[in-house]
Image (cartoon, rainbow, N blue to C red; front, side, top):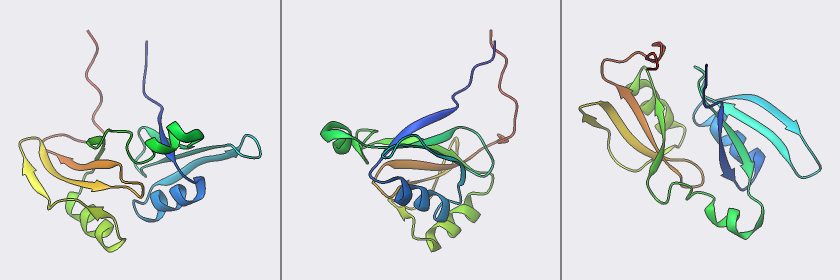
Length: 140
């Protein structure tokens, strides 16, 4: 059996502003932008190296609208791994990505917290001793 997380829904205020931010600031690629109705679209973006995609889901109604930017309850809940921390940190800084702290070294790698356009907190991590293209461990 093979299972994988294909995409995660990220609540956004507007499809186009979110798509623009992820592609221009972080360099993500648009995998799909399909109209489903006059008000709803299926918009998926992902890092250029692949992996799990984000489904940009426009918030509808007061409960979802209140959760935009706070899906993690104020803590880091999205983790983006890189093979070159310094490259991405410098590039994103020049593109206006808001970093919430200075980069630091941890036992698991180099890391810095940043926020997306809505305030969701992310970790940018360059793992120690891991390759991003490594095969997953076998299941037991």
